[in-house]
Image (cartoon, rainbow, N blue to C red):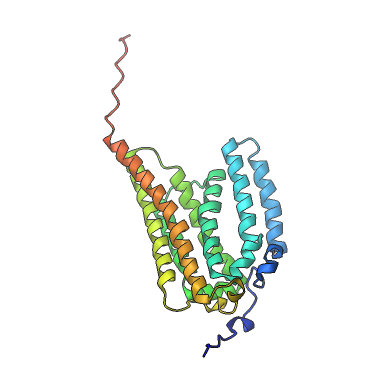
Length: 263
């Protein structure tokens, strides 16, 4: 006998990104929240104006950050996070590894406390995957945005500190280790989601079938998203920074310049 899945989502409040789209309506499922659109309509041109005389790299980074913000919170990706938990995992990657680094390049935060930023970012990543907190973000828009801010702000600070890391061995070694810790956590979260024997997020129970996925398969796909595209690039970046630190330590000291003639 085929088990009957309860219509868990039917009596729940509508989540922030709106109703779950069907595959045929996905491309039209844009987020038209007037508050969000108003904030973006003010902040994007303000950033362009502020950076009008800045270096080209900062201006390009602000363009990337603006585009990624639209992708994450206005485009159909936002609505897809309601239908599929796997899309939620992809959304987290977009925020942490695209939006936050672009913000850090365009408007680097002056905080240089990498460890507190990493701890705050790690806490936010784990909090998003606690079922009770995930349900609270689903049911309450203020909680949703509080958890988004808890993810974006420390990620912004973390990448700002990383990009400001000096080239010497010790700072490069520390930065590489911090990235390795972040990669390890992404891999661990991915593994938990991939191998969990039951559905952890019942909000998606009746929403995944239209995309050809069972709820458990959707959760496993989310784990693979966090595990492979989430962990592997960060692990490679960490390895590169550790290699730079190793080469810096192994390089012979530069010969000192001969002293000039005495006056």
